[in-house]
Image (cartoon, rainbow, N blue to C red; front, side):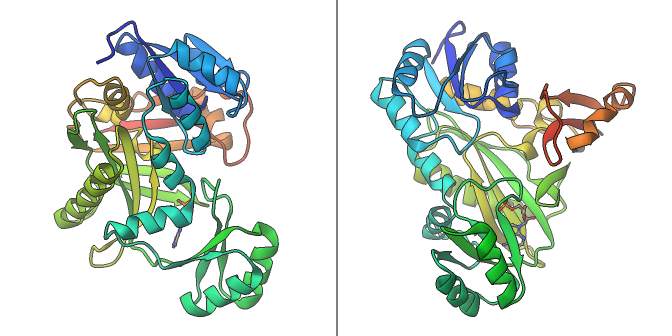
Length: 352
Ligand code: AMP
């Protein structure tokens, strides 16, 4: 166990790093951020920040010397970065393998399928001819997605016709993945944690609504059968143990009519759909992650009451004064300097 006073290193400087840093401070840790972005949201609440390229070997070696453990706040940190930190003597959680799997939509689905977890049918796409063949076998509607570095609905285009496939390929190029369109009834996520001792804990399933591919609202309890929630936990247990995972991990699922689950993606980190846990659960997902990577026992995931979390996206955050006057709203603002369309600027949680 890393004792209070130790230093947690976090790769990434976004809002997840900011909320992890605040949770780490509550447990008496210092946080050192490593990011390629100057003046990041996480840096402004942390003891120290390295601003350098994720492949800068000298900066990574220096960072490794100054922290007791390294974790990540976004999955697109190059897996080589985590490997370089391990080579420099750092303890790193989650592992480079977990990062690598979550960074590649094809590898991620192969991994899930290898554990018996259903995903949409898919095919890797490296050329227009492969896309045409994939569309012929998977059928329309389908989604062409970039294989790597997509997030919040970016890098994905719906395909209904062969002409759509041509246009989509023109825009996204290769490498890509074609996924069958999933006619889901609702979307849920399961936020799970595994401690260094192998203990696991699960938050109640979150029901998620997206607008334009971006999470807009999460509510709990999710409107799913007990059996569906049980299956989601079983899938998460399989993923955690196959990866020997330490920390918080999220799996997003589509729920089909009838309750069957189809996994969409894995996030090897705390997740936007878990922001409600800050006020709505005994232990927040952020504290839980810090506990796990510091080798502490996991905290209680018990939910206090019904909860709603609404994202403040782009100009939504200009309503901060109204929200500040709303006594039912727990307001979180991420301190981002620039407002952009589709950018997550903050969130509001309402209890009860
Ligand atoms: P992603 O970036 O893959 O998580 O996708 C963002 C959102 O797009 C998801 O939360 C869904 O609402 C939608 N989506 C992604 N993949 C599919 C699919 N295969 N079928 C239907 N909707 C999808």
